Length: 171
Image (cartoon, rainbow, N blue to C red; front, side, top):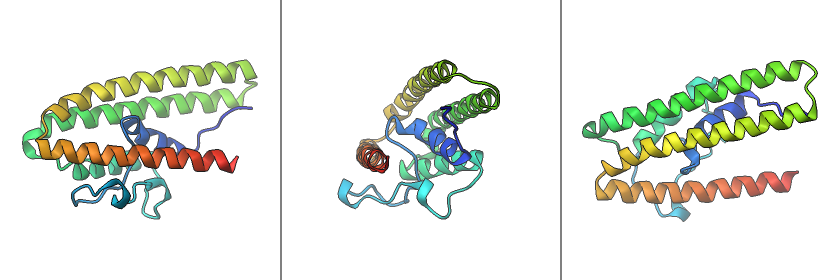
């Protein structure tokens, strides 16, 4: 019972590393609307979503920059944050490749469980790094940008919960 991660799931997972703060996206350039009116953020369901995981991560980064209205003055904080997203995505891809290789052999249920535990710890570590990078960026934001980010991420968390509920019901 090996868990296989498809490229689409990897793209979502890589994008959702940001999602631990409140998740993946094709955001609009307009100000964040109240949660009930916020734009669609399920990039993995959109027809225009890149199939290549690296392209999906880059699209996610660009969309987040637009949604958060990052200014030129915030470029260094943004660049550090975006680099953390990329690093986390690369680490997730490396774990995925290792899992694929292990699954090709005779992986036991115990091996699978240990691999899942390792991936969970690595994901948590990545989220901690991301939160630290985001804190620096958030602290450089104007009050209006902070409000926009707060509203945007509150809506993202709500979407993530709805998405998880939908998938739980599908099982």
